Length: 153
Image 1 (cartoon, one colour):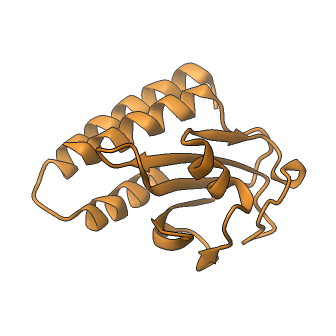
Image 2 (cartoon, rainbow, N blue to C red):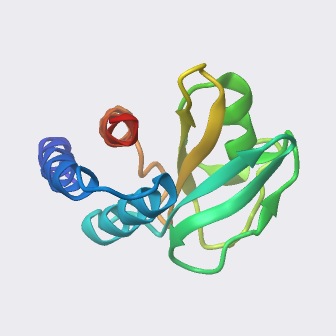
Image 3 (tube, rainbow, N blue to C red):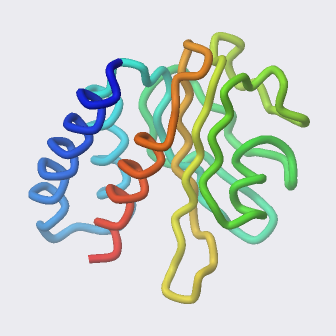
């Protein structure tokens, strides 16, 4: 997708989610709304969802797409790398990422954005996979980080 078109789409999705998430609801239901809207608005998303952090475990939360890995082994894969680094990670080719966890062999690239609480601890990650190689860039990172900021309001 053209970079300008992608950035504009993120702006529209942000505005749509701002309205949807402004209503009362718990964090989990808001995460489900984010996953659903993103999955259906972004053509290059194959799997879109959250993994919830609980001590030494990442457990599947709300998601859209094929069946997910229910839990992710500690310190393995892209999701744990984002937790451990405390920052978003873009992987252009997951098959070259050390320790990658292949929940679905059709995924070829991935972006993971950590969700932090008020103390800076990672409480969850937004994990998005694409069938395309090199599907994610800084526009995706910025757009997704902005969208996750809506959960803090």
